[in-house]
Image 1: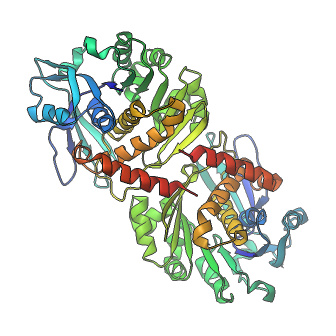
Image 2 (image 1 turned 90 degrees about the vertical axis):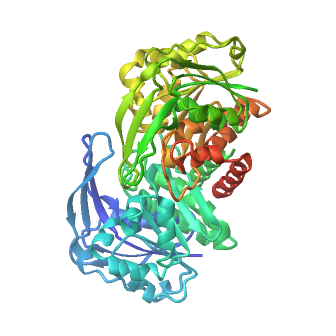
Image 3 (image 1 turned 120 degrees about the vertical axis):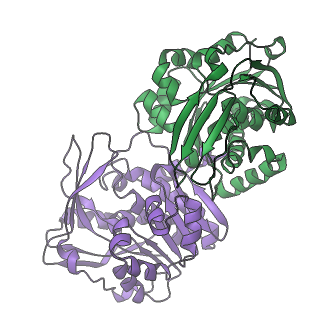
Amino acid sequence: MSVLIVGSTALDSIKTPAVENPKLLGGSASHAAVAASFFSPVKIVGVVGKDFPKKYVGLYRKHKIDLEGLQILPGKTFHWVGEYEVNMNNRRTLLTELGVFETFTPTLPESYRKSPFVLLANIAPSLQSHVLDQMQRPKFIVADTMDLWLNIALADLLKLIKRVDAFVLNDSEAHQLTQCDNVFAALKKIHKLGPKYVIIKKGSHGSILSGPRGYFICPAYPLHNVCDPTGAGDTFVGGMMGYLATARGSIDANIRRAMIYGSVTASFCCEGFGLKKTTTVKRTDIEKRVKELEKATRF
Amino acid sequence: MSVLIVGSTALDSIKTPAVENPKLLGGSASHAAVAASFFSPVKIVGVVGKDFPKKYVGLYRKHKIDLEGLQILPGKTFHWVGEYEVNMNNRRTLLTELGVFETFTPTLPESYRKSPFVLLANIAPSLQSHVLDQMQRPKFIVADTMDLWLNIALADLLKLIKRVDAFVLNDSEAHQLTQCDNVFAALKKIHKLGPKYVIIKKGSHGSILSGPRGYFICPAYPLHNVCDPTGAGDTFVGGMMGYLATARGSIDANIRRAMIYGSVTASFCCEGFGLKKTTTVKRTDIEKRVKELEKATRF
């Protein structure tokens, strides 16, 4: 089945002491869509400017991503400039140019409205809600977010959370939202806001699912070298949704394995700047790491 | 088979904004010995002063811990005073009184020297080595440590590491020892120092084993409320060694499950001050949580 993904479509300039990496393909929707495309057909909703490089359109197409919902408007593509310190642990935002994103209203093509799986990747919660308003009874809705929306659009976010099946956020965002230091206490509080499934991402420490079958402690794939974690969280949810949309059986029966596939896909994302590594990966590379992760968790 | 455990035997005064908890039974050997006692006979090596409360000797005895190697010397028992902040995340040492520990030389009773399993719990590495010198061909030797010894006794520690089968440390200590931020890169470097097995503890994020069968990603038991993590790392290695000493088959075949038992035993430690909760636990409580952890990691 197909996955509809809305989120940001951006150009990311990622600096390190060694390299510049100007205007790589980035944004939550780009990372999530490429990740989901390994498993299922993907329809993307987003906006770019006239300056959006043709090679990036080609990259989307190479991953067979449906671009009917990608608006190309006069103006500039959303541009983010960030810098890593020597040890690659601290990322600083140097510049954010919203461009055509400033006035973006996601309007779904008719062919998108019946997509059974909807991933509301990180973007303003009012826009995530606006996409949901246009959908016809999706089977499974997942929303991701970031600290920015907790700070400037909390009311919108709380309204959105009530409407989704699964809500995904990272550990520091969960702490900010619930005032709980403990992730399991935080999960309990977030369920009370509506979602049946809550997933807390913990970076290299993996992620935790809380759902009807209890907790699932999902490991991260063991990486010896992290090049650039930008987009890893988006890749995780994208891979998870792509796998879920293609798996037979209930969500409950498949969501754990779907997280493992998301986790493995995210490990490739971390190994290159932007989408550089992810876009070179084959399904067989993913299957190999899933098997390794199975071996590394068996006892 | 029996486990010999050497380490500190102390009185811990653990303050929080709400309670005082003066002079609880503490120390790495106490936590590790109680944890191991759920699975195997334990022989403890340590020193206390004449002020050591009889009720704590009773607590050791209740856990059938062999006390022939526990020296009771004129003077005061090692006393540690620490304080937690409101959110229980930051611990500060207020006072350390070494007492009889200052001149402690662990001398093993004859009946201890053939113990097949040796746990060198956290204590000065020169004392850990001194215990090894007195042993007769143990089957499996594990050493734990702490940042203090990396700071003031690194040469001794490096000498010790060469002699052990498994070396255990936490993630910040691994970083300090190897200058690697990445735990998997750190594990690789630590193997080069000698040990066949290396385990990095990551607190509530679980632990990672690196050994001949590759990595094992060991989860922490999901706790909604952490009362006092003091001794959790000691409890983890103690439980692990206790389980290993009783399991049939090779170390390789059992070490992963042993870590799970250690992890679960440590979860009880975190739920009470000092050894308060751990000493009320029954083997059946441990088995129940092991089953839950199996359920929470299956996919």
